[in-house]
View 1 (cartoon, rainbow, N blue to C red):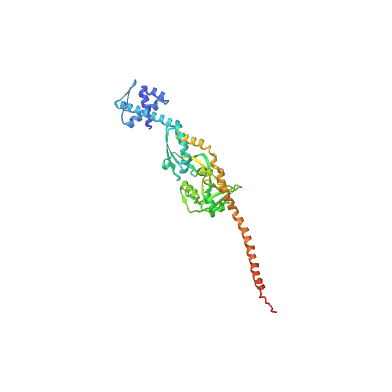
View 2 (cartoon, rainbow, N blue to C red):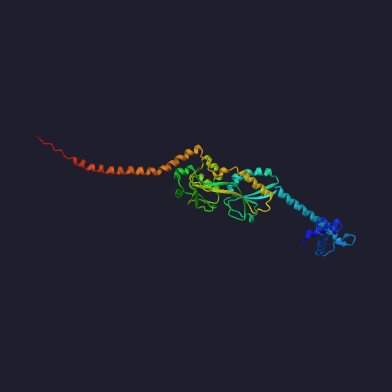
Length: 363
């Protein structure tokens, strides 16, 4: 028995004063209405109505139940109205997860705009580079900078970025500039622990083919900010998303490398657990992020070098490029020099032989 349905029929019978009129208002047959009330009385083990051929009246138990039933049904109506209103109007708390660097650099600056548009929404943000379980950890939404690998999640693409290999001018002056991906084997590479293959870096060549090279280094971390700081101090080569090093590249604090071998693009998603019954607060926030970050298509491009940085980068690049060329001429100079030394040594002996005593004849 559906107790809420039986409760609704009972209250309508009391208000209408007959089963026939109540059934008509509810759109059911009189026999169904009568059976619903009878089942309810059986369930409660109490008579609720006095029935005569001419009228119905409430028993004492029926009056008490009727009063409480009205409260329960009224509360149910209010609950349904509140739920419907939440679906229509964004309100409540969004529990949000995002990567640390992205959250600080790009999410935080736009939250005030969203909160101003939707004053009945609050946001609880957790920043971590770890991939969280949305369902187990109770998140409404997460921002992921990777391909979607979990088929149970729903994702909406909000942007695209690309990893960039870069280094400080100081590092490049001391260690040279890699010209092809294979040169990375000779460099100290800073490794990000949460990357799917942190010991392998993949590039694309001019024909669209992929080159994957193994890299190694003396520093590994699960946080991109730490690795960026190390790169700025000349510790090694950095591979980070362009949105994280964009400003460093624009100012020349870091210089982009291997630009003829760009890394594959990385999609950026807002992900949530289910496509069904998405709340207004989550839907509005995802729409807001998609609209805002759609304007940042430059995250997939490496910004041009400023003039000052180019002046630092070009000599280092030229020096690295010409280093190999200067080895051969130097060797060629060394060989003639060595060969020249042999005749010189040989001339010493004839010269010594030429120096003979001169005898003076007395007269």
